[in-house]
Amino acid sequence: MTISEFKDELDLSEEAEETEETEEAEEKKGKRRLFDETGKRLLKEIWPLRGWILLAACICLLLIGCAIAEPELLGKLIDKLYDWTKDPAPGLARSLLPGLGILLAVYAAEGLMTYGKFYLLTNIVSRFFCAGFRIRISEKLRRLPVSFVDKTPAGDVIDRMMDDVGNMSDSIFIVVDILLSGLLQMLVIAVILFLTDWRMAIPVVLLAPLSVFLSTRMAALGEKHWDKHWDLGGKLTSLAEESFTNYPTTKAFCREEEIQKKYDALSQRHQRRGILGRFLSSIVQPVIATVNALAYIAVTVVGGWLILNRGVAIGTVVTIILFARRLSSPLERVAFGLGYVQQIKGAAKRVFKLLDTPEEEDPAGTVEGPTQGHVVFEHVDFSYDPDKPLIRDLSLEVQPGQKVAIVGPTGAGKTTIVNLLMRFYDIQGGRVLIDGQDASTLSRAENRRLFAMVLQDTWLFKGTVAENVAYGSPGVSRDEIERVCDQAYCDHFIRRLPQGYDTVISEDSTAVSSGQKQLLTIARAMLAGRPLLILDEATSNVDTRTELLIQKAMDRLMGGRTCFVIAHRLSTIVDADLILVLRDGQIVEQGTHKTLLAQKGFYYELFQSQYAI
Image 1 (cartoon, rainbow, N blue to C red):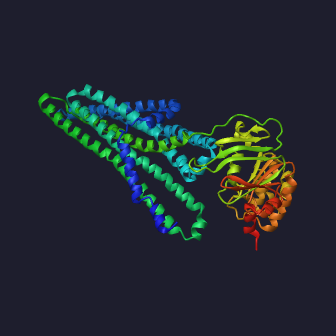
Image 2 (tube, rainbow, N blue to C red):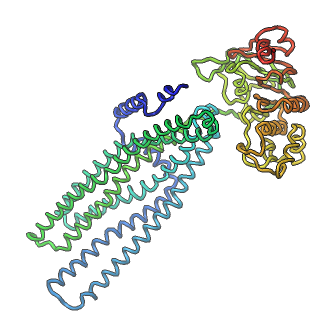
Image 3 (cartoon, one colour):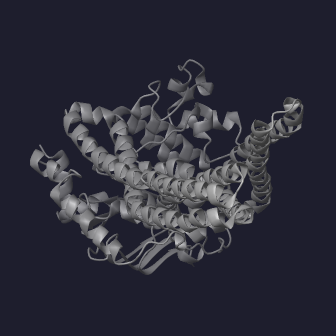
């Protein structure tokens, strides 16, 4: 790829911006609602925690009671002070102390209940909600087909599981603490305002719907930006994960600057969407504050007129003003909650999309009797892309115990045959039979228990050498592990490690070389002792001397097992019982090494290209 082509892929390109504009135009065709399908589903997910939420709601009601009592108590104290200014008399402090004591107790109770509510929501409800989603995603990933993993960047999945679920867990606070308590408080305060003085209550209550309407509209406008913000966050995580994983390659080809440009471009779009979303969410509170200011002015004007012309007590006016202030607080909280719900919905859409990904069908069939290893492909058709056929009408028969080699140029379909045997992908036509039983009728786990597998790319988890070798054979003894490692010609280098078989290694470990890692994975497959064996370029990372040793060990261990070997190095399969030569998804030649060379066809050309002088 040239630099110019690379720059064309930057996310700030005109094409990317035009795509966003098109998406936004499509979004405008339908109105966004606060509680659309995503919002309703969020509430449904919260429902199992209803017991804890009900407890939190009860605390909210008690807090509302405190909020109602405080202005009432303060208004009565102000009335006593005002009466004292007209008729000073001794004992003012004694008359105020009971009311002050009660007011102080109410404030203290409010503080304790507020702490208890947040502790409940944070440490019980929100934690369980968040953990539950992450467990569900983890279980979902186990049931998804390999094709999903092939097409979805690992960083994007991690971002959904960590960041998006973390943002969703905040919905507990929004629904309970902000929306529920705020709306209840608004309703109760409105009733009290009318009971105290309906004339001053009218301007306050009339302006409240305007505040709610404005906050809802602002919140809806910000949702599309939050949707894009979280989507771009997943792409950023994927790019960072990819760059870190391929760090040596990036350094070797001096691509740091290009990767940085791509990251900066994505980051700018991510930041821009976040700024727009936060602006539209945060502008709600100033708008609410402005509307509330109008309510204060109206109450002050009406209250002053009532004091002068209708003899209304100053304490009543103060009480109304204090309650109007109390009304503005839940209004602002509800406005903030409505704006924040859009952030949560944007994250929830990505999580729900993952959870709603179609799972692969898995029949419950089991293997009938002991497996002999007789494998038949009957007119098999398969393609990764429906528009690009790969394998067409493939038929072959492998007898029990045969060593079958599959060769051919890159893209011929060699690894695809392995994917079909392991049922990582399902065929689109024909049948694959194992000992006469249709593989599609077996459960995937049952099908895969028939195969031991060694791939070109080694994989070791963080653990001891012995644990890595015994990965597919839980409960096996140490003596058996050491015996198999000796047959796989890796016992000698294992014993030279600092703790021998108890040395802790991992995929990134430098204690063992890439060739030694491959030997360990081969020993792992040997130890599994399964009736069918798949070697996909298993000797690609092994030197010639070690390759010969492995071939001798494999010849001893493959007795009675059907083995499929995919190889580019034709020297490794000259003793195969059957060699299948693939080209464009078709078997163009088959036979032994000698017969294929004698035919001087495509296999002969491949062999000559590798070894002819």
